[in-house]
Image 1 (cartoon, one colour):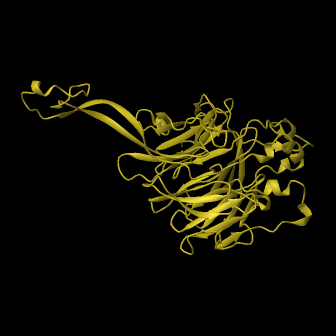
Image 2: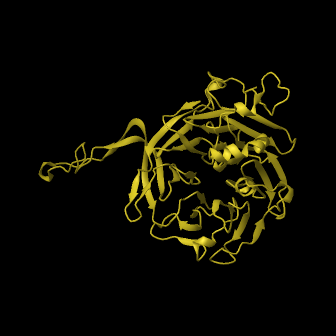
Length: 424
């Protein structure tokens, strides 16, 4: 368990799972590094300790629109590692930044023209030439800004996704998706634009977007109407016409005042294999097969007991909460968050599911998490929790899964929890 001073917003494992980056409402990014295995302490492996902390974004003010731009980190994405350094993208509502994270354990000494502080020497005092040498020093982690991608979004950025070509990435806001080259900051290409000529005709917004993990021409974006659109950049420069539309026809008998709000997709993720899509709406998580557009392959009820509570959830604005979802490394289990600091896991093969709790009381280091159950009135079993006693201010919106192992990161209010499958 890791304590944080302010609310943890996002967390993301890098491609090896050795590093975990988290962003918070104060615009800070904290990177945790996994400790190497120690033969004398078999339990120490898997512990993540703070590796580096840096301020990614500062609050800004847009004088033209009289708008305050928050420093809160919306998304973090690692770039695939290509040398000793690590690179990551972080974004707030408007500005995306590329950061380089590198280590230094040697420092050069013995310059001819500079003194130890780096000041230029008086050349008349230089009487002999020496060869500068590298001396060992304490390990230092340096984080430096490499690129700033700004001024391309009128609306709030909700997604960034690095392409499998390792050269481009996209950023999405409510109405547009832009394609960037990682080396070029002064221009981007608009590849999706759903803004109507007259804003009064607006019926939906983009809620999330992601590139396919293997095919650099494919991307998917989700909408507030509950639809998914798969776009192929080879077909046209502007991907307003989708190649596939994934949509489940609504059952008229279930129609209610809240139908549209709860069908809005808050997150979409490609499976590691690239064959499936995982989406999250307010009450369910769904798995879609890319080859089947008319209905989801699997539907998982995250907290069906809230159906009767939608009225009060609408009044306290919880119904607009945006939950994320995650795949495990083999695409066999999915995970997503809920209220009361609960998070849910669904095994796609066995169809078993479990509710676990991320709270300080229930998670002493190396303690085994007890499954939790919520009951809807009637008979209660000993450890059951009643729907009416759930705390809706404690919500798990952000989760991340290690790319190969059963290690998960859960962001809960001002704590980051890291859970690991128990040792044999």
